[in-house]
Image (cartoon, rainbow, N blue to C red):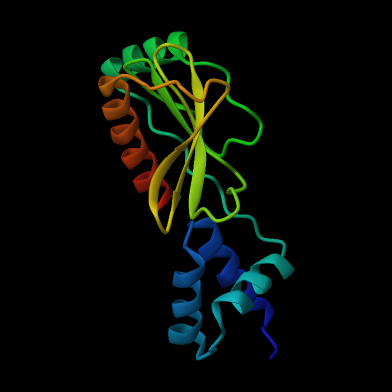
Length: 160
């Protein structure tokens, strides 16, 4: 399949307009009667050396800035393996592993308000905490509730 220089220019314009690959796929079919798979469109954009621009982050509200400043003071440094910055609320922070534990659909680390860190994982048997250095440790009910709420929000943000 040959794409003319004029068509390449139009495709470059779509990329500059931050059209998604799916939108470009539909536009190719509608405007040029070219049917391509999503992966082919991705390769086409790559072959044309076109780069999607990252959208600029929105300026946070002053209330959000105060919350993030407080969170920054209480959060601990996250490991290199974490996909997401830790979620901090009430002294509990939750992180998602970049590489999931064997047998887990999703896994990560939680640091409770007293500083104790444990692993967690969701498998076909449900949510479980992986014991840390002290196998007798039991987090407070408030910490468990904060952990569950933050985990729910984190997984929802990640599309789980």
